[in-house]
Length: 496
Image 1 (tube, helix red, strand yellow):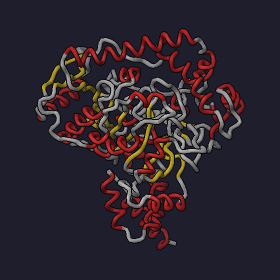
Image 2: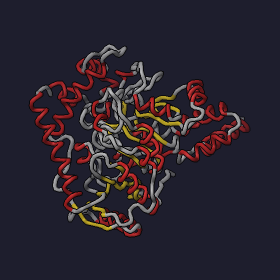
Image 3: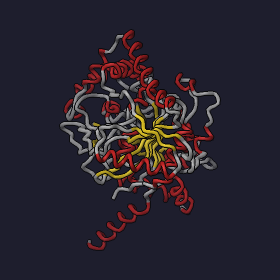
Image 4: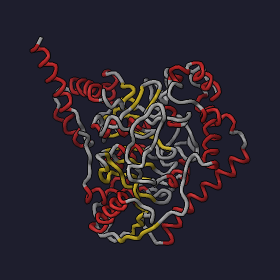
């Protein structure tokens, strides 16, 4: 018995040691050295299950047979064999798309989302689905980020008592652990950038329309987008390049400029920031921790030869403020009705899902309610919706563009947000400040503009990120700026 226990312990240790992948290249190198690909993937999938037990970032995985089938189908493609996790609100044939809700446990898509098809065409293997905040944190109060009725709570890999932020919680936490080299999240307002920052990984929220939303469980037509997460900027850029492009079923993708240069998304220059005018978001009310972090940002920029200009935003974004929230409520109700059409589910409208939640309240609603769903059902004033959508979008775009134009800036940089907070399932997200009292990125979300966050430093042993903001379709510029900063800062946090 003692010998068996020693063997079992050693197996676990080997599994933990062998499959921790911090980038695409390291995974491809290990895969290339494996003589038996079937055994390699079998052991790899086993290690993902084993190593994720405490963090709980994964909802579901494809079978070994499906993974091998996809591997052998991808021979000759650029990213042949690279595993990727999808946030569990993205359609992928053969695996349920749940939004983290028991109501959708049997939601088996008939088609891949276009972004998933593009990933497969590039050789990526869809490994499975990542946990999230149920209904992308748009169901009720007081919600807890990273909790779903179908899979429970995702924990922060840097401290299991702390929250991973949401709603793309699992997509970020899986990268932080090294379970997969890359993943896909989605964002309406902060749902890529907050978990990326809090889990110490790179997250890219592209311009709304650069990536198709077809086959993605919706919140907002005007703000929703999918985007990549990775340990480093180059890998995130490689995934973005793979999933970007037009889709006739998503009218927003028709707005992609005809001369948009997808190839330049991965043509990165470590000296890019030299001579660039960079607006650093600052505030006279900054805490000492904020001042220290901003000082670090400036030192990195100075080392890269950037011209630094102190700037401030005159307005901010709070998605639960009356106008912005009404737009989301209205669009969610309409979007869910459209998503449900033609699906083999016993629901036709949001009202049907509300009824399911009520009937299963002991499990679905045990930690928080569905007040947002109920408010969404009442948000039917089309005239009000159109006016407020125009108002908030115009103001957010004008704020970002005016700061860029008035200061002749190439990019705006600021702290992404505070570090993680203690998870509290009964009282919901506290979003404790950790010495950082404000966040950046809300305006980019409302404007539909791109926002990139990369790891900056630790605060109380928890990672925080730095944000790169710009105008519409400015991904090439922002990615290069983030890459140049990353190459100087060299902060790639790994959980202990």
